[in-house]
Length: 273
Image (cartoon, rainbow, N blue to C red; front, side, top):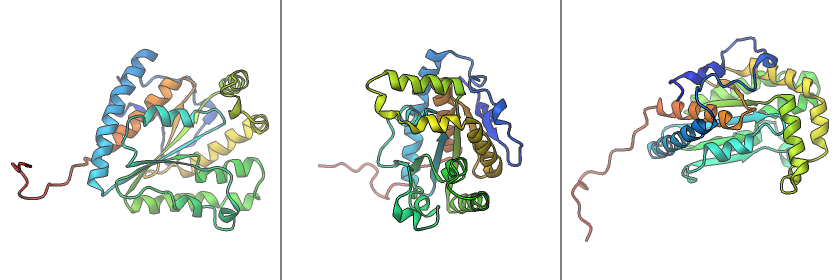
């Protein structure tokens, strides 16, 4: 079982010079157990998450935004399934951001994002996010440098606005190795039930691996703040990835000291007939 705060080793401090190439995707230093022990501990974490998420919903004064970013096959979908299994769907929402629609392209790039930030008492998970506009947009040349470079300041200001209005933000970059990505892409091709997940564009993006590493490095360095931190999560081992994300979320919510509202007066001892 990891000590309280053990996952802080993966947090990127504000102003730190990130060396993403040196971040080990196989690291598991924050947990001294094996895969079986990790899975068992994840079940305990999910129980804690279910309980604290219920208090968040009942309290209704705070909210949580979880941002998941990764290269292809990085494990965003799997993380959502494993970490949030069992929570109350009334208070937890997941939104994925794909290619912008014509309506979205006709507006500023944060317009479609702001609409989906969590309301009071809610947890919202972004599967991809506004960071695509400084990642894929940069790497694939979808906008000139003078456009996407000014977006770092936009994003920091936008996230601070969301935080100031009562939302806690946690951002996770699920970090896999190039070799692990190759194995996962091959598994999609080889398994008829997973083949639908593969498309030819995956190869094009993979060919730009170094460009994506540079884009992620700058984006994380420029936008990891005290109030909206980035965590670079070792994600080659799926069980360890889930443990890091779940532990960080649970400890963050539990630190809010959320409480159930006081019941109406006069109902104690009431007998329904």
